[in-house]
Length: 253
Length: 334
Image (cartoon, rainbow over the protein chains, first blue to last red):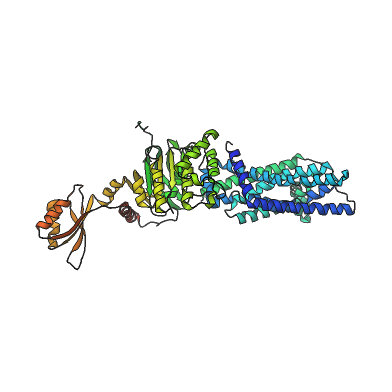
């Protein structure tokens, strides 16, 4: 892991000079700002049961669907398209270090994106002066959910990028895989054909993988180790597959 | 000069690489002693790049063994990667970085200590004449500069072995000259393996040449040895008129190894261009001239032909095609 930090700092730098990062950042912040103001408008009209933070984080899937692909689609696809992976892997660097370095850089940027939304809550607190709107529980829970689920989502993006040398294809694959994970669980949890008795074990497994359910638990302050394990193991598997995919493509290049 | 240790810098034994049933490299063996500049020649698809990639540990070999400075590539790739500088075909570079940033990043990856790196970067920038563009973005550099950035990067960590795949492709003659001098300046300090199909350049820089075709070595040696081996000792060209019919007999009296290789057509003045070849190295030009004149021939010109590496290359590859056909022709992997 000697070169992990070299690659990480290089990748962060490359992400910071890349226009797609800024496009993602602007789109992300304006969209989240729009959600936030419309949530506050609803609250000013009528009292609601949920805290505004809980509603705000409910829309997590929307920015995830475009920020994660924009941050990750380039990382391995571009290296292979330009052929720079060849110069990279002929230095004393392992594939694992390369993949982990790129993953960590993308995750860092993802967290910085979400971290900047903390400004919204600060502005609300500063100007609304209404303490009941700022409930620290759901805010902390929401950010914890974002950072834990982000581990997995970004790993999916890195894996998608390792599959193709075309950035656009990698981006599309990433969106499709994210949608499958985020909405697949929701769809299957509500699917009635899974209610049969023979399929109860599958039903349980699906319920375990339902990301919206995890979101609810986190914003209520329930941090379940099984859910943490779901994201961590998903991340590890996606990263192992990315490493294998990069190495397999070398063998058949 | 200090005594060189006996261990060769590059040792390749029976290297075979096949891609999905197509054999790109077929039983290549060679050794390169330390400090030598070796040229790797071959037509497109001969297996040059594949061999180089295997040497760097980037691709695994199907069978055979490769070792760099005594470290086997297959079992100790890390030790090998610390000892090579590699510039791949087409010299891929990240377009968004500045030259000095790129070299810094590569230097860190190649485990040069942070304290030494700055001065080492200055050295290679100087060596490759890149000082003027050190703060420029690589994507905006011209081809010649990009190529030199690639070379600077490969010599950055002062590796004992440098492998460059077509370092002068796409350069103008002036830039080729600069790159050639640069490579020549590494002679003795580093072992350099370069591939190219620009033959005069190989001839001028390299101590030894390996010609491969269809995954096999078809000839190897110094350019002079190759000429002798592939084309015979030396050749003469004579333009003469008169009783040319007695020429073969006449040649036999001068030197039994001398014979007529080809005869050209008669021109308007009655002269014919005749190519002669000999298997001995001795200078026989004067004897030929004297014999021809004494037989009453009129001689307009006599010259000793200097075959270029190009002739050697063409002859050697043609010979190998004759030898291995029928077989699959060029297979698309270079």
